[in-house]
Image (tube, rainbow, N blue to C red; front, side, top):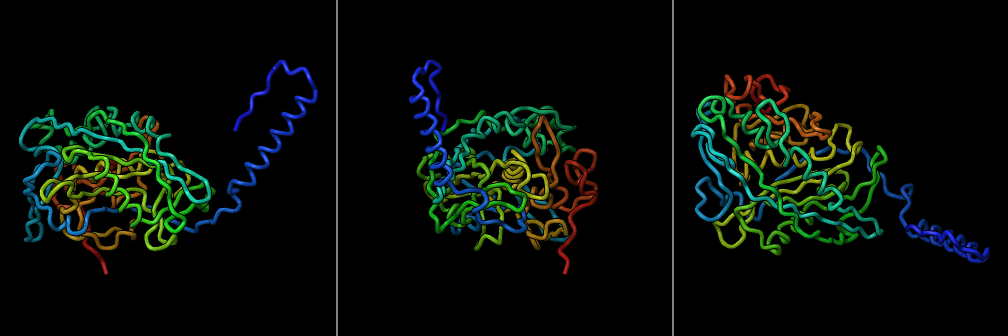
Length: 373
């Protein structure tokens, strides 16, 4: 609260009254707020990402969706004698230079907790819109958006020859009115990390159900890509010691089976929450890349595991961000995440990527290892 003193106050008692009032307001504010020192403190936390679907949706969605949804293409690869089908956003990069632009929405969430502290994603809409998620930036695979650059990198064998003008772009987002959410005390609270950053922490299952409910309430069209945006608000699974989910993507039936809505949620985060650099749009970059590569959360690949990401155990999902959580770089002042390529999951040798790398930054020098143990 700010009080502006009148410059021409002539009476001393008026000034004294103002000073007393200010002191009272400040004391009351401090008394009513939850001092940082009194917030519950978290121990070690691990960044992780998940997927969210309606019950049964993931198994019901196939690569031959007949209803309304986002533009997508399907193909298959063979590994170890097994044929793996997959579906991605846009058009097949081997089919030539086609530009696909997906209409996009941003829905900010203002999350208010029982102790009176709120985290408003609206504050980070402007920064998100100015980031490489939506604005062209200089990537090795072209001057373009982050997601498009990653797709071009992943399928460079085709992009560099038969599909030089291939693109999959996010449209200029429609920013929806902020959705105000009161988080019940039983479903979340405000905590301070071991690095002294204050965060909101919410029950994963409650929050996932909230997103699905809002999707239907907002009546968003299934041929678009809605992104829910929060700020410094993370999720726990089961209890607060299993923390923290920073983003997810998923799908849901919006009217009837076959009409499928894809979506994502990501939290814009301040530096220092985690021991690895997951700052600003890092979580959103992770989710955009995964949405492009596995929009219907049903792309099964040979099972993989990496020692650096034990939170995922033995996974068989084509989730290009999961193997490289926390591996980031600086671009135009933002921190997008490195992503594993399609070739890494398909165990292709040589890789069909730019320069034959198995991740954009070259973190992986060979394809995915099988699960150990």
